[in-house]
Image 1 (cartoon, rainbow over the protein chains, first blue to last red):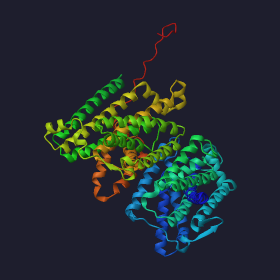
Image 2: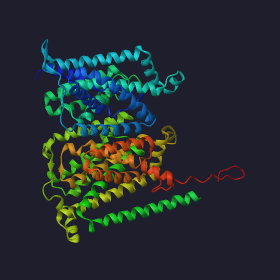
Image 3: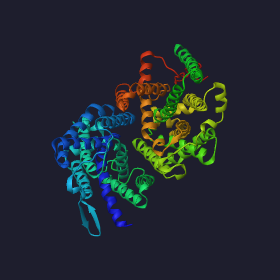
Length: 287
Length: 353
């Protein structure tokens, strides 16, 4: 077994998990909302891209551009008309509503698209690879990791350099006081969820071009994404990236030892980190 | 005074109603066809799981998405006991509950370090770890699972007696036996939940739910109480899981640790019936079953309807169907409230009597 190769493949896989997790981390950090439907929303976005690809006969990368505003609008609507109504001190209502949403999305997709596995065809790029020193990496996995880092950089810029980001952080810190400053938390939340679904769409593009998907795979993706968010620490986007990479490397190492241990190794890494640091590696907010 | 007599009346009425229902349900196998008995078995099993989850989420504030862990542990323990050690299935069921409770201790040590949403995700991860770990256990079939040896449940203690008494096939007698067991488990769970919630510890639990700091200040230890509820519900869930899979006769890691079947459905049952109320899970299980039956020709449509109802309940009626009924009519079964303490009387000198 080539350890270096396993490590690199793990990091590349971790990039995909970080993409799954970035939107979740944003929503979790801003409004403490645990969106149990996030995995299914990613799968929904993948089907949306697939539909646009087949309807217009275009490349999935181009189709994703059309899907982005649609998913932003969906996030905005979901937050404004559904999730804002159940956010509060009690964590149970939002958990249960997103859980219900997860089951609804999964089964609507099942009714609409059957349980068949689908894939987004990206053309020749899928099988291309680059020699990087001693290891060879696939172009698509490399693009995934680079995109994940870019998404985290952009989100961090939005968070720390713009008025919107200031509103995000202020609302996260103290929901009552920001209202005295003329910020409506509900509108801030709606934008945050919209952005989260834009990131989910980017994740869906890479999920769909790299592997098969069907309506039932959402919850497993959600679990990996949540592990990344929790390992990274609440409210830290760089932490989420680190968390995704840790899960990815752990899974790759597990799979290298025994293919049946891939998922198990990721979970065990999660438990191990939380046993040592119950609040994750880099927590920003106190919660 | 009227309120007090209302409470007492409502309480005796509740007990009478439940006793009547229990007797009718116990007598059912004598005249109902086998298919009805099998259907009722599943409803009762889901009710038991729902009663347990309701104790966790509705009363102890522990929103677990990983209760399928204990269903799976219970089921696998019973199967291993029967297949590997030749135990009687009934002994296997009891051991299943104990093993589930023992394993819930390390699970609690890990998950209780995390609060709120972290707890929910951590329980789910633990259940998935167990699913993957049990897939590695080759003696009980590994990832593809295994079946009970032919005739296992027919040789179960008491089945021969039922067979002679009811004059039915031994398979039907085994179904009847399992049905009575799950009925007994449902009754015990309901009565035990009621007694627990009415006890000093139950009062403490509800005090924690209302205000943690106030509860602490009068000497309630939230961690101890929550851990106790977690352990007890693991016991009940483990026994129920063992019974379910003895009835099914076949086990795989994916079916025993299924988040949809043993947690998602259960959550919807509790939410629709009324979270944080005792009759809620029972109402919810009945509604769930009716929905499933009505929409059985339309594939997974019942799941969509279930999800939408769950969302609507959270938006418009947080205490579910039972809560709505209680609000409209003022009628309550198994009320948990206590009589307010009588006003303290003082003598002329101001001393307490």
